[in-house]
Image 1 (cartoon, rainbow, N blue to C red):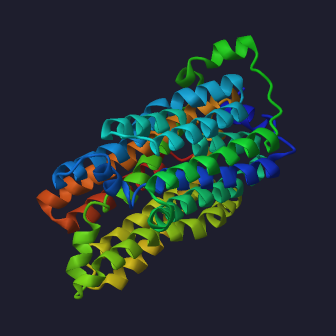
Image 2: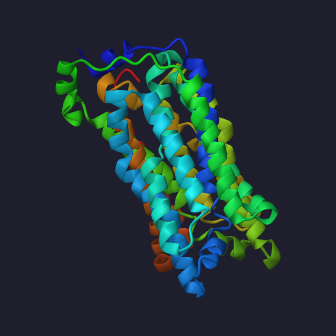
Length: 406
């Protein structure tokens, strides 16, 4: 039996809509809690005893990246355990673990404790990626793209709202209290997950476990999976590559220095807003015309949109182009997940989707590093053009190895 056939015949929960709603709300709240630290992280580092400006910047970067580092390492493990013991159990673990870790961050008394607890947050977390596995494996195939697109919109909305909440709450209630409030909200997510997610879990049979335990060895054609892993990494890399240079780039476009940070913030949010608006629609379109077609088209269109971004002369032009790029990239994550889901055996779906999550985290870490290096050595236009070339190569390779029926 082929992987696709087996995936098509996997159990589809009658509660998939209810589960989608809980996963959507849970993913949104946990992502908000993870990203709200951005606006005030340097202030908290300074509060913990670091006084020198360069050290504050360095420790802030280490503390922020720590969560994504450990999350990338353990994502395949949590996916494998989800295959063995149930996806709901992993969501309960993630929400409870994050609630505890987030509350403890608010009690830190030293910067080393902050970094350790951020590492712990990434280690114990993974609610959004776990939700993706649950929704992907329990939704009927004809609705997979739409459901994953809706979930992806909630995740991206969390990334957009988190920094806004982080900027508004600390002046009102204090930094430590903001962490405690976030921990309390995630604990509510834990309760909702425990009581309202319905999973008709059946433990895998012993012979199936032995056969599928090899993971990659159980996949007959690995090329589609490799393309999806690369596409996920390219997506995050394309989104994050301009993060280190965006404020400096905007400063060249805006005549009023007092408007630079405002325009830079809008530019950063424009792509996320575009993705939020398009994710579910592109997912629904992919259910009709094929996920591969949407993935290849999204990569190609995004590559083309990066070219004019390197030559803009006004801030509003960059905002519009980033928004359009967000619209084109919005369907990538749900389509990537759907293709993986339909090309691997049901018993290793969580494991392989865990690798997909890790590849996206790698893009999230490598993107800013690569963007900063290229921008510093070759100029800021080179960042856009290099990212364009990368996405174009991904689109071309995806077109080459696409299934012939797509």
